[in-house]
Image (cartoon, rainbow, N blue to C red; front, side, top):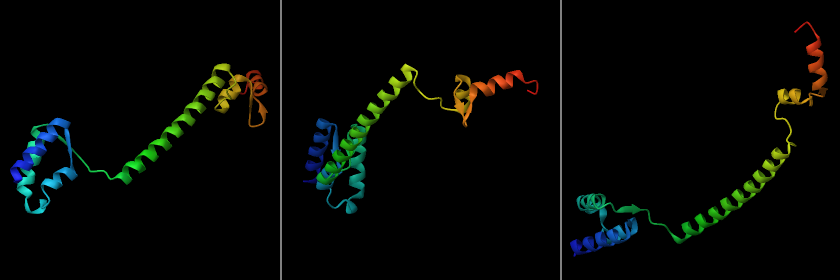
Length: 127
């Protein structure tokens, strides 16, 4: 009986390309007592290129779907923010990201006018 069930399971694995742990445990319910048989079975699956996946419960599927929906919403929000950011950059309205950029652009840094500081530094011999 065991050999026929194992052969049918291998056939199913070939047809769909994988088996679940649950399907294997149905054929090997006393896996602890048949370690060598189970090891041989996994060896056969390996040579046949049949993958074995963890069994998943309906609750786990639902939880994964909720997480996927949440991630998709976050990606949508980030995409919209990225679009707004890139439009600001293309219009040249983006603020300098560091004080050195503020100086180069003649903006202010630390409350002082960058242009005045640069002009004073150029006119001074102390630099």
